[in-house]
Every structure is written in C-alpha cells, then in structure tokens.
Image (cartoon, rainbow, N blue to C red; front, side):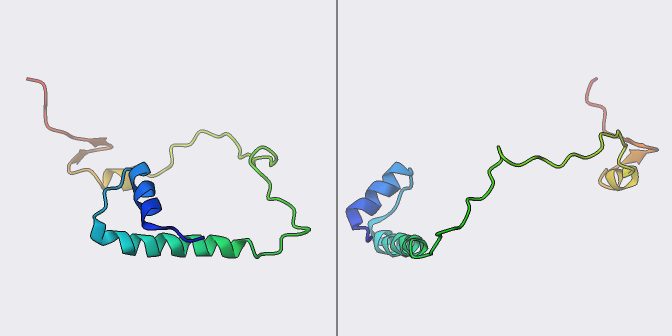
Length: 95
C-alpha cells in the first residue's frame, strides 16, 4: 500500500497536525515506510499459534496486604530545601 499526497494531507488534518507543503514528501515517505513494516507482518506464519492471554483471562498475582511506612524518611527528607527533625519546613504563607 502506498499513500498519495492527498491521503497524507487528510491524515495530517484528521490528526490535527499542521504540515507545510515542503514537509509533505518526507512525511509521505515515512508513512509509506511504516505501512511497509506492517505489510511485512502479514507474511508471518501464525498457524497453530495460540492468541496471547488478555487481561480478562489471567489471574493477577496477589501480594500480602501489609501496611508499611516504606522506611525511606531520610531519602524523602533529602529532597527538602529545609527540614526540622522528621518534617519539611516551609515559609509562612498566612499572615
């Protein structure tokens, strides 16, 4: 499949992409290259290959529901411009 300039303009308009006429040939080559890769996928023999499991068919792995504090207080406070003990200190904003 090969796209003509009119189709490339229509795709750009539908995607709300503003293109100059000087950029049209490069965009046309790029889109034709992408479609060429997609056409190559049609040549792959998929007979006997089972479809991948979708999210509705697989059971999620569950983890133990335990409350933790993360034990990362020092790492979090290292991002603060100023800290007092285990707290961020910020300038007063209410007068």
